[in-house]
Amino acid sequence: MQYFSVMHCLSFLILTTTLLLTRTSAVPSNLPTLRSLDEVPVIHFTISRRGGVFESFAPGGETANLTYLAEELEKAEQRFNLTRREVKGNKLVRKAKVKGIGGNEVGKLMSSVADDGRWFAKVEIGEPPQEIELDLDMLTSDFYILTTTSSKGTKYDDYFSKSAVKSNRHPFPRCALPTDMFRIPTLQTSLPLEFAHCRPPKSSSQTLGPSGSMLGLAPSSHLSQIKSPNFLKQLLDKNIIHRPIYSIMLINGQEGVLSIGGTTENAVEMVVQRTKDELDRLGSPSTEPAEDEKTLTKRGSHRANPSNADLQSAKPDWQQNWRWSKVQGAEGWWQILLEGVWIDGSKIIKNQPVVIDINTPFILAPPLAVKTFYASVSGSLQLPPPYQNFYVFPCLNPPVVHFEFDRYQFPVMQGGKGADWFGMPGGRLSLGRYEEGSGYCVGAVVETGMGIRGGGKGEGEVKVGELAGNGMRDVWVVGEGFFRGVSGVFDFKEQKVGFRTY
Image (cartoon, rainbow, N blue to C red):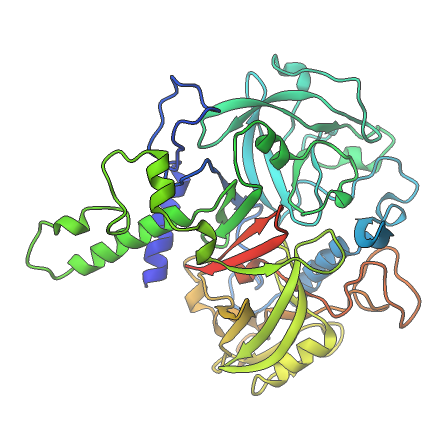
């Protein structure tokens, strides 16, 4: 009950754009601003899931749509099969697998835009402003806009922008490197930013696809095909933000917040305190709140019109409320160590490499790990082909699952999936009933064979039994479901990932 109170209040707070920054050197002095909830500049983007909430069950019912789920699994696996590993200097790095992307087609990009199920932010660019949907991708580091001949997607046309500045540089086939004005939320001002503007040739199949844009959030420049200026680095260079970090918090199955340069932590703390105060007043005979309940900040930290210096000296180190894990493995993705998987209070798996990706709608686990997982869930079964990647468990006996990072157990799939999530048979880990009227539910922890021939599907697979070049053998993928009730922060400089619960 408290979780939903906090999330609904936070949703209203963020989505009505009340998170405005204090005046900084990057903001014109005559621009009206509100008092910041952060001690340093933070840019908050509202994000949405294209197509709405991930609907794993058949329309009008509660039965899992296994055909659709199998298709979504294949799509997710293909995204991870677009890279290879190679030695660069004295380290192992990930790079785009060129032949596995476009074949002989010149200028084919590893990532795709405007796909259903992708999380995106809306951004205005140019003068007069043109609204585009900026797709988030944690598996690439490119920042570009793709304009095709199709009417699908959201299109940017530099011809209609008075503020567009063209360039003769072409960092990638069919991609120029212009500059235009981007409207930055929370700052409520526009900034000139450089980006790759790509137009596929008419002979390319890509020109029939939708227009759109991409914000790569991977921690390594080795996963940049275009080699265009990084979005976050440009904000740092212009002194718009001070920290090379971003955070993601999903409010529900189709709305969330992307914070660049900081987190939503202060906003959440304010809403938590407000919710606590309101709950404390319920049933109180007095209608006037006590003096110490009138503040929206923590007791002892509020002062009238505090300066930025006051806020910085009064607040503790922002990192202390997060549980941190260092990035490991081949440089490229946000890969960290899952220290343990807990089911019903027992640790059943330990020390597993995991990749974080909010665009994956499942939690993917390698064959041995997923078998161990469901062997610990009483009554669970593996489905027969062609759905052998999925397991079922008794709907009336759902497991309580926690993932352990930095010696802290985080609840898995504990947040709400829209208003109807608590009514889902099998609880939060369920993708729906196996069949109509069945007592078994399909689990959201799904087996993947990526890195092994005959498992994950995609380009560039190798001979039977050999390791694939993407290095995904024995690696988990922690997808969207983990972020229900858990927020993540990603630090480029320190190469680490932090989590905390709300």
